Structures are given as structure tokens and as C-alpha cells.
Image: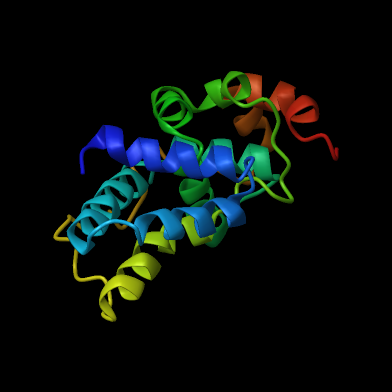
Length: 177
């Protein structure tokens, strides 16, 4: 499985789920179980590599603005959700996290930003196909600390300065506010 096939599976499941992260995870599992176990392993490697690549302070800050705060666990779920949004949103956010204000039509913190189940889709599919747990993917471990310059995620002034578009667009992106 190459990168294009990986993103095609992500996009197809998201579109069929109409953006619902739980439904997207279920559909992704269903689609992965139609593949052979080696393809599921390749999918898992692609997913995990992107998940680790998104372990950055600037993305954590953007998640904190969008979610109104983001614990370690919330940021883990956010990274899964970010991958689930597809290549354009994911790569755009890595290039400049503040651009999420332009890349997202809306962001409902009650539904969006929490896609933990997407992170387990390959594990579940592999187990269904083989009856065994997903083996070690042979990828480098996630760094112990996020990459980049640390941010004070509790400092609203610093977050507003670092992410002006997201901060300003919170009312548009988070309709419940």
C-alpha cells in the first residue's frame, strides 16, 4: 500500500461517514478487512508515521485553541482526528497549524477532534483477519517530548498571539460557543 492508497482509504471512509469520526473508524475497519493482512500492516505503518509526525507543540497549541484546552489524551485523539481529515488538512496543519482556521469549515468540539478509534482501526482489522494482534510496526518510537518550541498551553495570550486566525475564528469554527 502506498501513500495514495492510504489517503484514499481515509478519505473514502470519512466521506461515507459524513464526517462522523466513530462511523469513519467503523467504515475504515470494514474496508481494511477486505484487504490482506500485509496491506493492513502497511496502512498501520502509514497511520503511525503520521501520528508520530504530528507530535508537535504547535499542533498541540492549535488543538488547545480548537478544543478549549487539550490534555495529553485529548491531543492524542486530536492527532488521530487530524489524520482522519485527509491529506490536505493534515499536511496543511503540519505546514502551519493556524491555517486550520481556513482548512476547516467548522469544528464542533463535542464531535470533532476526538477520533481515538481511528487510531485502532488497523489493529482491529488485523485481529479480525488473522486472529492475532498487530505485530510491531518497526517504526521509531514517538519522541518523549513534542517536537518544536514548547508552548504554554495554559497561557491564552500566548495562544492567541501564536494562532491568531484560529483564535479569532473560534466562534465560527465552534458553533456551540
